[in-house]
Amino acid sequence: MKPAIFAIAALVAAGLSTEAAAQSAQNIGVFRDWNAFASTEPGDKVCFIASQPTESKYSQSISGRDPAFFQVTSVPNQGIRNEASTVVGFTLLTTADVTIDIDGTKFRMFLDASQPDTAWSVPEQEAALIEAMMKGSRMTVVSTSSPRNTVVTDNYSLSGVTAALNKVTEECP
Image 1 (cartoon, rainbow, N blue to C red):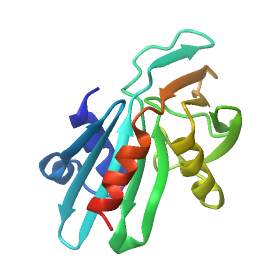
Image 2 (spheres, helix red, strand yellow):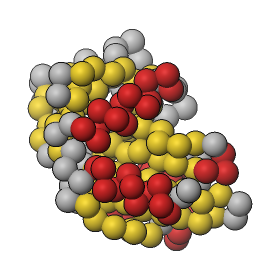
Image 3 (tube, helix red, strand yellow):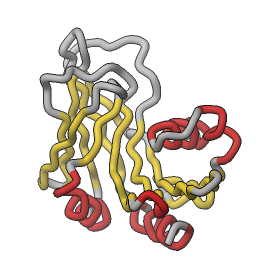
């Protein structure tokens, strides 16, 4: 795992500049396959957990993929609690679904054109997604690249996710 990549990417996704992210993210714990981070910016404390895929499969070869990760972010001063997202490391095909499967339970994600390599959990499903992550053992994220339509399957271990989420809740009440 590369904590610096998690820290910078997660804080940028939360709306902070890359420079501010690099200077302010601190690893506050490693919990098996998940890392927890906290950052204090003027007026906003950002806490998040992140993990990288344990395995990735492709329907056809893909080159030049940036690091992929899944994160859960909380920004208490903005009313954000346990917002799940994934940075896939390539431009997503906007007409294809991004889905999460946790031990057979499926969730969908949505895209925002301003961040073409990122998908977010649907707000109405977020609590159920976090609960499934805490109870589950394996999570699979399936997405499709643009423009080649390569189907990418990223597998994540959920070992340590509950402890990491508890640390974030403690750090960002």
